[in-house]
Image (cartoon, rainbow over all chains, first blue to last red; front, top):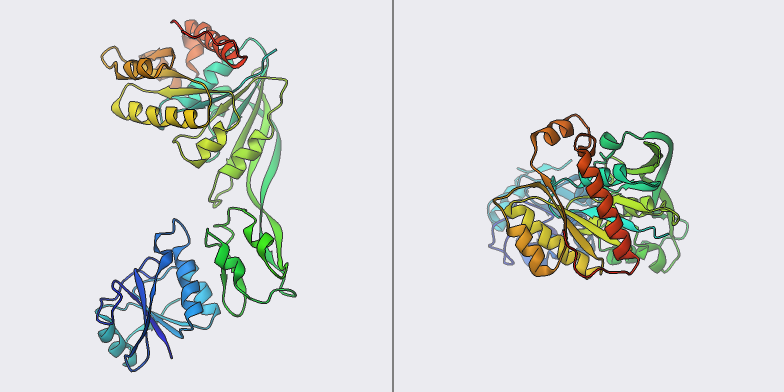
Length: 110
Length: 291
């Protein structure tokens, strides 16, 4: 399964970004921690609806799960509709986040 | 007879747009129309006390998906610059509160699967104020995100056989552009402060871009601050009136009484401004406005 992590930087060692819609990058990894892809979040400077556009890019990426700090209701709706599991309260760097995710320490949004 | 459409605008909020627009209307010697285009907070009714006799809904077209045709191709979400659509593989989600009714999605959908539906964005209330003022105001629906479509609908009510006074929203962004567009004169209200001057300059720039002649009214005028006068002289903009910073005016204002009622001499000044605007907009520019 592809996991999309909202991130401040483009690399796999970057800190997780607390905000979903307005993060700089989505770093896509697999459950073994392999770095598959980095998507620049083009929606982050949208005056309105950044979360919706960011959610659309996650849907288009084929990810099955999202790890982020916080997510708004408008962004959550399309992700849930697409069957993507969204986990919130995520912090630390991306590899730490993946470890805690595998230990089941994060809760589902919504 | 010349029937100018006059927009009272300001740049800065709280300078006295509604006070000036109301005084201009209350001083007129002939019937006219008044449009409160500050649709987020229309309040000229406090001064003009209209009797509202007619209310109509204003709607905007937003997308509605026809799932018998939709292939979930994603084109609609891709082209929407307002992020009002998301395509999930299951459905197309529409966030109509973000929609600007640009029509992109229903024009470009390759399957012709985007229909439109009407969404209420506000109301227009109309009636008579005093004896000779045809009053209308827009009132934005709670939750409606943008005012320009409603301002446009309010302006659609303008009749050509009477002069019109438009009370614009504050600022210099889209709602003010919408209010000013296609009007004949901008009456810019400012106050003798640095912020008043700064925002007046922005409003003047806007009227120049829109190619609308303008004049300035300084409200709460002060003898000690002359930067507005200097700016207007430099830019060759007439200062049409200075309303003094006066305790009686302030007291009346706080009771919803327009200044022209307690300072009758102001009524004559506003009549002169109306005459000036009629002259300027009829093409007989006087060149040097002396006052």
